[in-house]
Image (tube, rainbow, N blue to C red):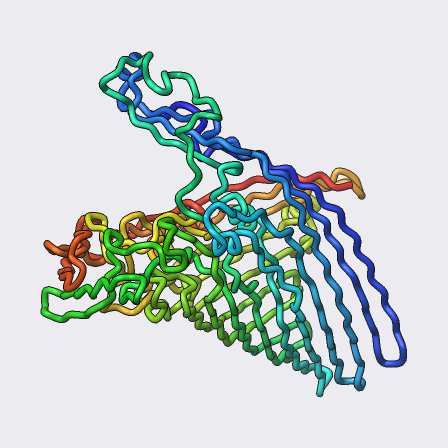
Length: 582
């Protein structure tokens, strides 16, 4: 039982924004020019009271009644963090009507944010002072765009374009880097065990009291969190080309392709800049290698990443803590071909049918388990779905053409609609179960989307990396399908007033859709359990031997048992709505 103000206490965030936008349009001849300016001034004040009042843990109700706690933890410092960051954007665009059949769009955008430089931690030497006192604001963020539309025939249109789209930096990562600079004035903490040799009222502290903020037991964090000096804000290059042909009046057939390339994507794992590489140098000792073998006899030799042997001090030899940096090394490539048929209001029926074939690959450490080598991170993206079929239809016949007034009133003003999605399964990675050994690279990171390094590949607390014999994201889950249906009826009260009742059902046939993305919804955190007398023992500096035994602890097969999720493609859901219009 936890009692007190835990670390996960809800924060109180106040955000104020001032925005100014101006756009000027000028038409001359066949040119339609647009010029614009965006300004956004954002001020955020975060109040995070997590564990600033202390947290006690008790193993059972009797110990709670006696005040014999198991442990006590508390933070001190400044729980209030205010910061301001303005955003500036400038753009220009020219819509050029080259001829009656050809239109060009040319555009250029420049935008940037300005974060204030953080307070440097000067207590740990000049290198750490330089790292913690910098934030890499970026101003050269030009984003050109180009597009065209060509109509060689009244029933045919060819469209295409190319553009660069730049992301903005998430302010939470800035806040984490500033508050994680190791200064006690920002955050300091303590963790104390119950002294079994003293009575409950003689403990420090004695339940239910908290410690004074000036108590000498508080110390700053042993690890630092920063934004890497070489961090680059992600951006996407995108191009598309499609041909649209009218097949009959009101119906069109479209064939097209889309290509996107994501660059400098943020890693879901933190990079420890102070961690010595396994092969060593004059500063860092060599740690040798680890050999993994299968029962069949196949073997592979990899760097020794035993966290009991890895040492800090690569960047700052005198500092034994981690310097966890937010980095953006990842790349992502998406290519697709699609066919779409659209029928607009044919006797009250509108239909859209679309099929997409795509391939989505990622590389270079967007997810990684070994910060010294990103070579095993190439493979399908977690969002990769090769096939997707979408069907949408709405039928609203209006007033029924019958002679009986009663029958006409009964059969009129109905609308029936459906949306259907059929998609191939998403990939996931076969992992090593290292829950019984120490085979971790880094488990204390703040500036990232996941909780620690190994969650970058796996999403579980146990895995310590992908199977060295099987390619990254080489397994695919089952197809997902969702059929939604809507039915509505309108009732006229007067000529201008109408009451509408709508009923909708999602996942009509209650199809079980399995979410196997990276182990997030499938009990498949590992394929093999890495075992051996020297495997990850924290002592053997070279020649560790790990035997990979099929891990059946999570199900009847080494690959686990799929688990259902209750969102997106979850169980059957009903929804009802009532609307009054006048």
